[in-house]
Image (cartoon, rainbow, N blue to C red):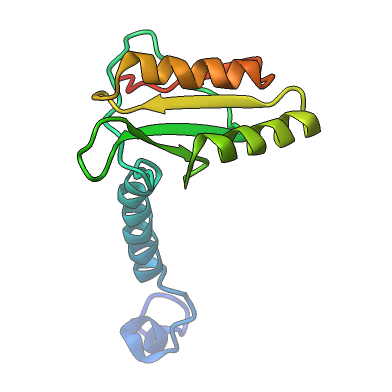
Length: 148
């Protein structure tokens, strides 16, 4: 002990003592891996609507606020002429869409709607739904486009 520097703590400095520090390296590694997984998975989850629609491109498209009404027109699944209408993700006919829309407009006069039409849908069919929405009292509506 006479030649040791450190005032009598030679055994602990040599590795014989108890380690009192917490090693945070594994915790940081796990946290970074979880962060990377969330960063990769979040856009995939957010950009997968339940109804697949090929939206037309628009350079002037704006983001809309969350709305109560979401009308989606898709090509008929059996390949025949016309379209299938979805209201908030549920397949409906026009009579049910009118009834639900009228009921929601009576509850909330400031209701908003977003109308998404598949690229292959006829312009007249989309305008028919726009006209339907407007005549039922929805004053705020937007046309969904793919802004990329």
